[in-house]
Length: 146
Image (cartoon, rainbow, N blue to C red; front, side, top):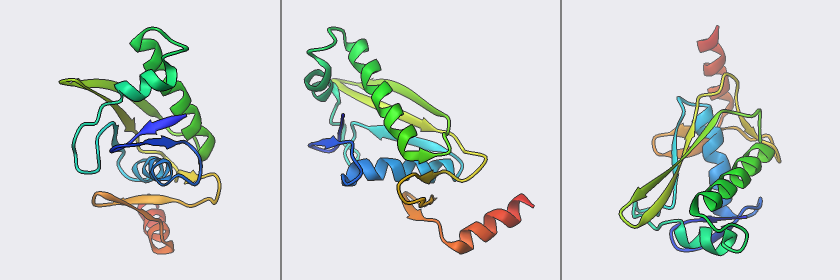
């Protein structure tokens, strides 16, 4: 499966930097107040559209645009659930901005910390970035819940 980033395809595998950022963002938003992740927008905020990658990846299998979108969301959701734990609530919404097709991934706040499966790392949001959860963050979270 591939993701569309600023100007290239991303293979959904553990060593791909952008794919790893998505997992970190799911963990970070889940461990904060929740948030939205937009796929098909560059790091500079420019729409890049997911239409061409969807056609390339799923065009042979699915004729309709909505079928290609559904297939992509199924694979992305499965990949996220296989690589983060515990499972958190995710909502996927497609948007059109002019000629650009964008996928919004809404991530809800989780009741317990969400971590990456491969190394059990936990991430939190720090402004507009993800950062690893430090032991001091864990103590603060525990004290706030008590």
